[in-house]
Image (cartoon, rainbow, N blue to C red; front, side):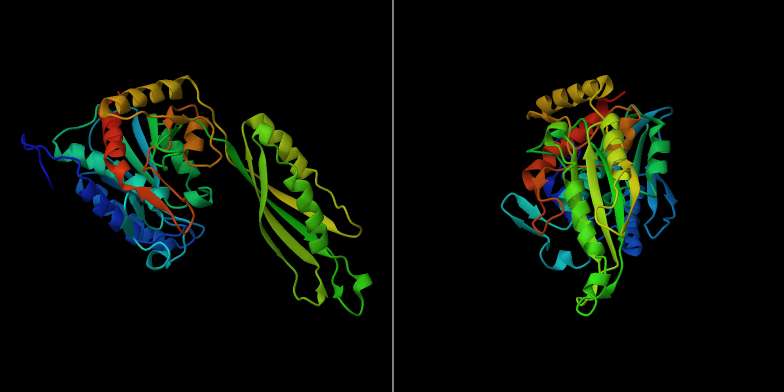
Length: 381
């Protein structure tokens, strides 16, 4: 631990990098509860080491545990720091395409940008305060989520419950577009379309069959056309399964659809279109299930004031802080922003390649992003 001439600890990028390396080394894909819980163990150990009181809620439905870490000071509504510990990458990526390495300013790793880098710098900022013998004006609680990458289905209730005790919410998702933070997000919805047709031998009795895949192809064209970029609506069929054999007219087919929307009114209008989908071909059935998974939220007065405060702090540190007022990606900040709680998102590391085999963070962002998080903890009251 390096110190200044006044014997105060400094923010050391190499120390931060080593901590991030340790977190990235513990691979934690969302659907592997045991792997995610190994990451929960490590985060809990690091938070306990700086004096946080831990509360761990066992996971359910095949997902990992939820970890709450509260610092032992302050009363009343405080600061909620939201981070997720799961990644989209399967076990093994850290030894292959995303082996931890530094190439110039880029540091590669599985989940390093989305979002173990951001989660760790928030921890480091709080650790820096503790090592300096200081406390924050407001109570501070960290909430580590195990399945954000799949929509936080088992942790949304915990997030919203904890947010009701917060005056501000700081989300450590990665920075956008060269260091910008997020002050609004589109909402997200998920739909499952199931088509039932009739099987037959593809050669002997082709005319007796009713292809579920053919009907699904027609439905996909309809659903994809719901996309309207001018209205900030996107629909994307991302998963398709169907058929039992190449020589069998398929009797069943399923498709998973992602939908993003700018506000509740638009969601309700497009949702109605999903629910109204009907068979196009003869003698087939179409069933649709689904709905909103993350509400949309827009920059309001509280978020605007919080952003202005953060921008002033960044200027003191020595950089200009920009914003993205409506990003298409979802986060747990959707829940708190939609509740009307001042929420700053995208406070994590800068980089690129989230969810790809070239995911990377920028080493040069470590100190300024950590300083910004530290100053927010120090000054919000």
